[in-house]
Length: 468
Ligand SMILES: C[S@@+](CC[C@H](N)C(=O)[O-])C[C@H]1O[C@@H](n2cnc3c(N)ncnc32)[C@H](O)[C@@H]1O
Image (cartoon, rainbow, N blue to C red; front, side):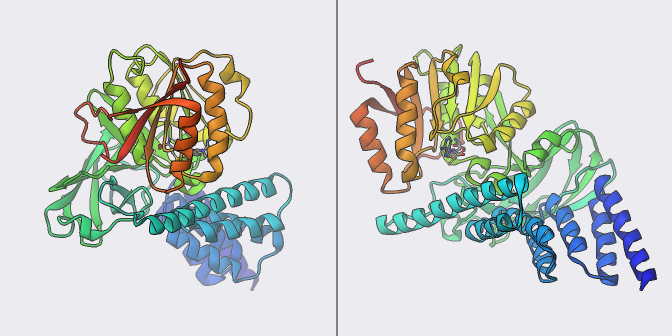
């Protein structure tokens, strides 16, 4: 028995060393061998961590479920439940993720308990939002899936943490809309051989891969060969006959992605807007709604990049963004010539905003916590701004009143807020009714600047103080 324990301990330490060195496949092999000798909650939890680092959320969830079945002691059980909550959230199973985090909180204390409670609250918000939306859109005859939505590719298989010249690996991607859903009937060329996937590198590397056709299930698998390594991002793009081309998916940079990883990021988006290119990391598992790029942001960033000569143009302006999420709009505004940008969101999202500021190498851009339920922070009130931007912030009736209050404070100081909105929930009309009662609200046509990005059902409003 002691000999088995020694062998398992040795395999586990080899696995951990491989994990720390970024050799994820070796780490998984070593953990698998150790588990074959002697299954345990710790080994399963550690193998799940490697799988999560590879974005193999299904595999991570399966290991964590198996770990829980061994009835581990309470503190360990709490940590396993929290990790399973992250894996489930990454798979958009928000209600189950919230239950796990709440169960974890009951077993933990101190800062760990706080972390579990924050995750539980986030998951429950996301679950509630999806449920409300389903109910409301069903009543309204609309759906969470419709053809005006912009599809995007997402990684559906693990990626290596680092790559070197000569490496070869497979990568699977899948199509989905902003909720991770899609409906084949809306996309007739998917699966008929006319739509393909191609690989390329953003940054210093060079990769090669034979293009593959996207299957009728919206998935495709490419074999990537690394011809030159370095600090680059792997990009998988859709090619061929699209009525509306989906967004590509990019890996995190293979080197120097630490800050984004610490913020929970697992992949990146890239918006090419004429001469400006914005790249943002997404952290959907860690941050839920705030960790993703939403369609309304595509319209708003394209608009601010092409509106010249009005007080709604960002050029030379000091810009404040509300509910920034991944920060694409505000960072885009800076790249389009804003002189100063402050991105804001709830506190949990700020590390991701900071990572994305760093990814774009922009100066004069800051990330500040601004929760609409709280007073506008002095860091914001002490600065002067010319323009407020906000995309897809009207989505939850519980947020209407705090958002209106925040806008009230800001529009006493700032001449105009540009608000991009996709109508999904019949209750959105309540917000716009209250907005019109309190402010001057003018509709704007989204100006695309020739961009192919813009979903045509996103509406844009210019909101000003009454009589300003
Ligand atoms: C649907 S997302 C839109 C994100 C981004 N603007 C975009 O369009 O991609 C809504 C954003 O509002 C933020 N949010 C939700 N409640 C908030 C609050 N109480 N205070 C500040 N931001 C909030 C979320 O964290 C999230 O980033």
